[in-house]
Image (tube, rainbow, N blue to C red; front, top):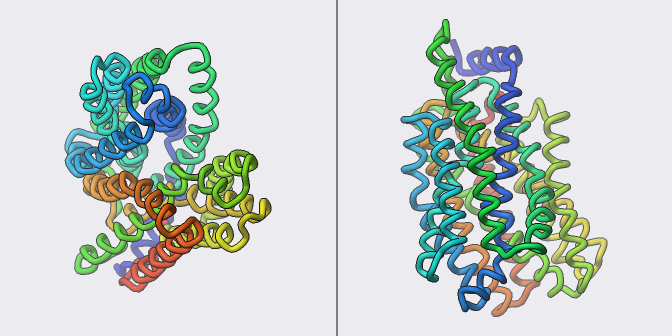
Length: 412
């Protein structure tokens, strides 16, 4: 049987295999809570954290960058644990660790203790957020994982929409320490039981399965996989560098281009645009390969940056940037789960996600600082031009992947 006919067969199996809706719904809840409590809340609470620790606010973000860096270095080990013990068990343990880390930050008696708890928090994030969740969906039902990842990212896209106002409302009535304790409770009382249920269901399903689980072999031949992996990690890292830098500096970036008070309003278009692109892909993107989706994602992010750089200080141009860039970033979240599965298969998927997460987290740690330095030294316009060049480089790398044998395999 040829690779092409094998891929067609897998597509037919995929079409007949239903996505695990209950698991996706449960993971959607835990992803909203996980990203909301461990990521999106930080920027709202950072100023008061700095005040209580006696630090400048930038030191708090510096501590976050250091924690992200260490979290990135641990990601490959965590990926191997996912393959060995199962993503459900790892996510269950991650919920306990996340709650402990949030409580540790809230009760830290010294700045050193706070930073230590923050590092634990970032390690816990790797155990409960997208990388582990995607692996769980692959382990539950490999041939439905492509659709399952799309559905999950659509639900989880509301994390910022839900938790920015929740965090602000709680913080208006209680100190940041109490907010973190509430969030620790959410991880323990909501995420822990859901992850434990998913872990139990996965283990029970494997024991009772009447036929062996049908794994996905991946479209790349063995000889092309080392180069394919290197190119994929480079492309993802370039895109993540742009995304991380822009997300952290979104409002200051727009304000610096002369948009003034409208910068915050323009920034609110970003989140809905992410969800919109995921919904469009879910409804109309059934025939797009993950590699083509990755190319579209990188193209939108690059076009968005170019639109902002070339039209500033136009409000219409900034709005176009927020929508286009947000749509590209929304697709990027899907691609990081689906492209590795398509190219390399489901065996060792957790370990593969760990390696990809490691590179992405390390880049996320340095990107905001790098853009800040660039804006001070070469100006915002030239900094945006440099990011557009990085986006173009990501497109070139993705095009190189498409030249590898069978890289454009059917969706799995």
